[in-house]
Length: 622
Image (cartoon, rainbow, N blue to C red; front, side, top):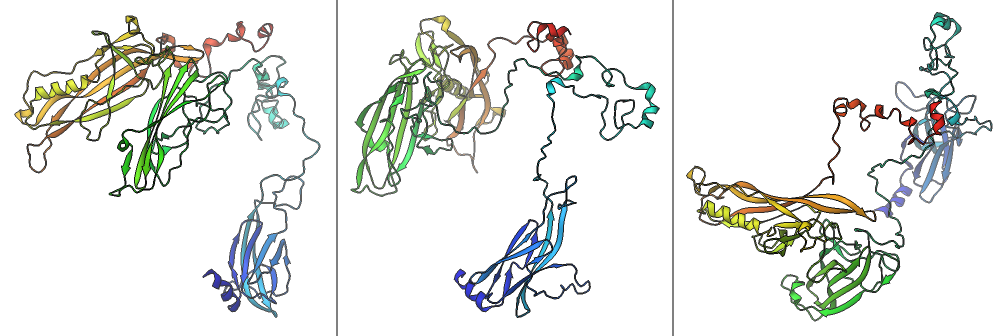
């Protein structure tokens, strides 16, 4: 279709495209399509139209390309000519004592006509309605006689403080230059006196506006602006928890991880002291293997570590491979990496050793590979059976340490780990410090279930998540030191004495403990090398009850119904020491509170103390 346009233009009449333009800028363009050989272009300003018919004046085929403040430029082409109309006058808004400028904001409002004629006969015309506003930006010449602005440190804020109204006389302000002599005679006997009236000779008053030269600590300002990604600096002072692990080339050490959307991000930085376990579904046709275990790692102090890599053949292939539909694997197979297990041994703020176990196997066409990547940070001081959760304070994301004091056996606080059927199974995952969590499972319940038995069963299931009696105060709590542990406060569920259903109806039981609430109170109790150390101050577990009712369809059949039970973990951070109670004065007279008002009366005499460093101490009494 596009190829036919030149041909149609050559055979058809001449036409401006567009034929009408609303112009708000200094330049506009249009195109005359068709055979423009021998065509003469003219520009004219339309001053008037016929009031009755609305017709334009007679066509202008004079060939003039300038009209008033306008110029016309034509760029001929093969099948179309480009027509450019531009304004030639200055569009700046007039300043004082300037000419050749716009006297009003609406600088130009005119109607223009561009005519295309051949042999004094108009074949086509372009109509332009121009409404152009003046430029507000200053583009003139800067005078060499620049105003000298005095140093404001040594100048008063105003020589006439009572002059408050611009362009008008302020009554009783005798220093106001906008007050005529006749007006001043009306209040000459009651002029403002002192500093406010501009008659003070004091050298040190609030109106002088002396600047404060003491040290100022910038306030912390929060912003929603996204920080720019900068090139990471070479490490020499060690890592902090959450810092990305760096390589010898000063790049991020990356291992594939899952994003918040569940997708697999190949180049995800590994953060110091943050474990993860990620699975990535991979199609062989799109898979490009990228190995990170061959890169040397910066240990945090400037030294480089070469990871120790061990290759093993995967034993259970089908735990990693899923076939696409009913397709059978073909003969096109190749060896691929199925899993990478990273173990970082750390001490203080450095990485001491990196061990990597790589599982490989055969992957064929028509198969989907679920790769697995795990990263675990192990303290150098820990043994194979006891892994610390911090030293000394807890690290976010590490398991909460627990113990059963009756048997002195190590224990854990658990959550249910999701399984395919969602039924309650003894598959647990530990509670991680600082991470609020919620998990649950489903119990099958018959319509004729005994209510007391149901309460005991759900309570037993929920109590199995907390087999401990105490939790560790710190991440390195010693099992043999009783003071390192805090007792778990248990609030047992309400146990009604009756077994009757509501209204003696079957399939309804009251006060069924369906939710276990674990509340852990933490606090920052100090810092080591600037890193806050977090401890656990107390743990409480309680139960929330519900009324269970058997769910029927159209008819009630004696089939198992479902009862969801859940466990929630909440970390509550409190100050390590209770805040200083407010005085009666602070409670009753909040307008004098220094934290909520700019005026701070309790600190009125602060400049007279030795703590004030704005000026020499001797000048504070002047």
